Length: 199
Length: 199
DNA sequence: ATGGAGACATACGGAACGTATGTCAATGTC
DNA sequence: GACATTGACATACGTTCCGTATGTCTCCAT
Image (cartoon, rainbow over all chains, first blue to last red; front, top):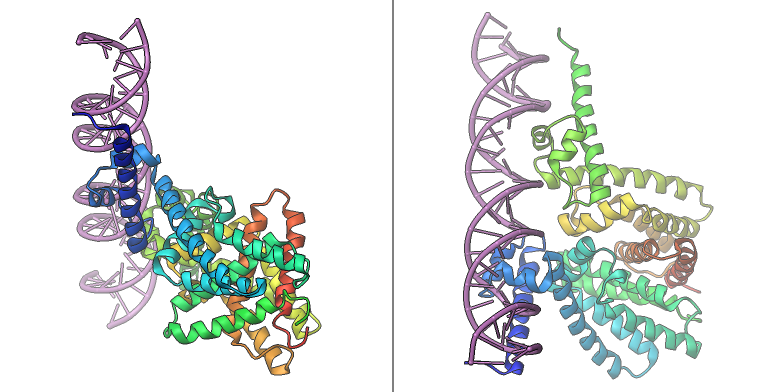
C-alpha cells in the first residue's frame, strides 16, 4: 500500500525532527563531546544510519540543532523588539532579553559554549546567528536617527552581544543568580550608554 | 650513578614542561578534541603514562596549558598597565591589548574557545583567568577615584572582557583583520566610555 | 641493605565515530 | 506492467582514542 508523496515528505521531516530533538536533548544535558550518537539516535527510535544520511556527521547535527534554537531565539527577540516604544528601548530590551536567554542551560551549553568550539566563530555559521543581526539593525536605526555615535553597527552589535554573553556565563555560575543578574544588567546599561551621543 | 635531588626535580619539571609544550602545540593547531594524546606525548619523546601520571587526564593537561598561557598574558598585560599615565588609560590600554592578544590563534583556540567548552565558565577555573582580575582592579581604582560609575567592578570587568573577546573573534575571521580591528577598537572605546561618570 | 614511593612505560578493555554495505519502498521509464 | 534507479534508512566493520591497571626502575628513608 503506497502513501501519497506529501505523506512521505512528512515522514522524512518527522525523522529529521526526531533526530534534531534527540540531539538537542543530548547536547544540552551531556554536552556535545559526551553525547553518543548511538544513544541519541536510539532515543529517537532510529540508528546512526539515519543520522549520517540526513546530517553527514556529528557536526552536521549540531548545526541543525543550533539553527533550530537560533530560529526560536530570533522569534522571541522579535516580539520583545516589537513591544518597545522607542528604538533605543528596543535595543536595550533586546539585549537584556538576550542576557536572560543566555541563562537557559540549553542555549548556553549548545549555542554559546559548544557551538563556537566545534563550529568556529559564529559569524561564519550557516545559520548566521540571527540575534546579532537584529541587534545590528537596531543600532543602524539609532545611528540614522542620530541618537547613537556613528560606529560600525555590525561590530558594535557583536561587542554588545559578547558582553551580554559574558554576563550570562557569569550569572549562570554564580551562587545567587538572581542577585548577580541585577548587577550585571546595571553594568550592562552603563556600558551601553556609552554608545549614546550624549550621556 | 645517582643524581642530586635538585637535578632530579629539574628533570621532573622538564618532563612536565615538555608535555605542556607539546599539548599547547597540539591544542593550538588541531583543537582540543582532535588532539591525540598518543601523538602529543610521542612528540615530547614520552608516552601517555607520563601524561596521566602528571596531569590525571586530558582535561588536566588542558588546565595546565591554560594556566601557563594565562600567566604569560597576565605578565604582558602588567607591563601595559605599568606604562599608562592615568588609571583610565591603564584600563583602556589593557583592554585594547587584550583584544590584540585574543587575535593570536593559540590564545583564541585554547583559552577562548576550547577552554570554556571543556572546563566550563572561566570564573570557575583554578587558574582564575587572571586577566579579568586585573581589569577589575583597574575598575575598582577608577570607581574609588570617582571617575567611573559605581558599578560592580567584577561584573563590569567580565562584561568588558566579553566584549573584547567577541571583537577578537570577529576580527580574526574577517577578510581584512587590520581594517576591522580599527573599527572594533573604535566601537569598544565608545562602549567603555559608558562607564565614565561624565561622557 | 631493604622497603617504599615516585616516575614513567606497556598492555588491555571499551566506547565512539565514520564508512561500507545491504535492504526495502517509491518513483520514473519503456 | 516489468525493470532500473534513487532515496531512506539499518547493520557490520575497522580504526582511533581514552582511561586504567599493571609492571619496572630509580631514588630516598631508615
